[in-house]
Image (cartoon, helix red, strand yellow):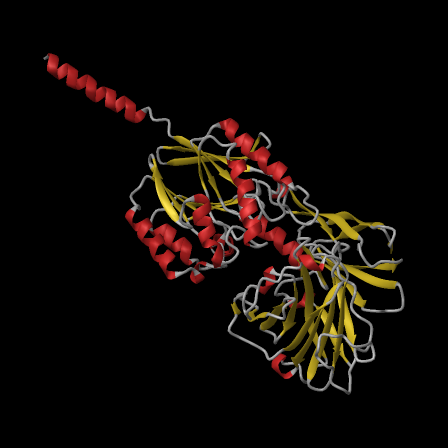
Amino acid sequence: MKRVVIIFFLFLSLLITAFSDEGFHFAVLGDRLGGADDIAFERVLKEIEGLKPDMVMSVGDLRESYNGEDYLQKDNLKFQEYLKILSMDFYPIPGNHDISQEIYRDNFKSDFDRNRYYSFDYKNAHFIIIDNSTIERFEDMDKEQKKWIENDLKNNSSKENIFVFMHKPFWANGIGEGKPDEMHELFKKYNVDAVFTGHWHQYACDTFDGITYVLVGSSGGSFGHDNKENISMGMFYQFLWCKVEEDKLYFSLIKSGNIFEKDIVSIKEELQSYEIETNHIKIEFPYVENQKSNKREAVLTIKNINDYTLKTTVKWNSEKNWTITPKEHNIELKPKQEKSFKYIMTNFGKFYPLPEISFIYPFSEDKHIDFASIPIAMKKYIVPEVKKSININGKFDSNDEWPGNPIISFSNYYGEAPEIDKTEVYICKDEDYLYLGVMCFEKEMGKIVESCNTNDEQVYNDDCIGMLIEYDKDKIYQFYINPKGVIWDQLIEKSSGIGDVEFDINIKSSVKKYNDKWVVELQIPLKEINAENSKNLRVNIRRKQQRTGDGVIWSTNWNYFTDGYGELIFK
């Protein structure tokens, strides 16, 4: 009898232990990079440490690789110092800033002593980390990783909880928009419970087919050029606090010690806000280079997508170099109404900084967009035609050989006054060729970066001149050239953003260095860029100056939407 009692109490003890397991907690850290605010990032880490979770997960963008190997190593040391704030295990995930190119995959492995994709178990949960840092959709993922993901899911499909982490939110534009979604189908097949992503720097959450999808907002990355918070749209420095209890996941969104409901923003509202800013607010600001008049007209067009009247106040904020009429006025739009408003912009002195336009756009029941933007100048340059071919020798012989005035209205990437040394671009053409002559003034010639020596190396990480040319309605030709005359180029599909680096154009070039500048001369065959019979050509031009970590751009739209490019007008 005594033996039976002892066995009973042993069994009871084990039973109590099993059912008294309180589960576990983990925090999820958002993006640090994309305009890093390290003060905010450090504060978030300290808040997490104060809550003492069992571990800390991330959604990537932890260290900066876009500025090259040396910068990445320095930034990694800084990040590792931040990690010392945490006393619990930290699980890194690669974002596009961590692995901007495949060559940085080894850096991720050595810096964190982990593969770029991996999985692990913790108590009753299985965690899967996926690398989508260098691709834009699941279909483009390397076969090796895709096979590993499916095998890992298959082997762990019976686990009580399965959580997936990756940087880019493929789901938002897939199942989030009601479209076919191969990755979602895979997760559904193998019983995934929740998917955590980042990249967009604002929060959203929805559930599809029983799978909770979370878009984790920023833990230090910026919210656009003005870095302005918008709580109604989940745009604030944040992290997630998660609890796993048996087969259930509970989590809260935390901002500076405050807890918000997880459904503060749905993916529908997130996509709707993007739709409004992209398609229903438009600012047109035509600008012809070297125009004599200092007065120009800007046009703001707004469409009210709501079922109620939209009322707001439009304000312009400018420095002394611009006056705007009217500077402030109230507008009222009926439901579904679209209306345009004209402004006279008068320039005094320097072109930059441009004035900023701002207003509040309410939508849905309780959401709004704090719209603030510098108008993108729709730049045009009338290209002079020459009868005699330009001598491509890097000497930039005289203004008689390079006719017309140069393009000098460059800004930084945010449409603000540039802080790098002056850049001048001369453009002309003859019957067969487009000619570019670029003067890159440089106060410290000994500090220019020119590490690439062979064509199609990563020239864009050097000091360089870059250009985007609309090749046809579906493609864009892009090239960069460094102070050694090394060229990297590709032909890009607009729809996918995928570039063919094997594509080459017969560009004749010459680059020379002087005491105070380096000069680029280029001869581009019009036939090879599909422009031999064109009356105009959409292009964009940029310069990168690595010693300042900055650059300048002709039109602030450095992307694959050619409507925002500058326009070359052929006489």
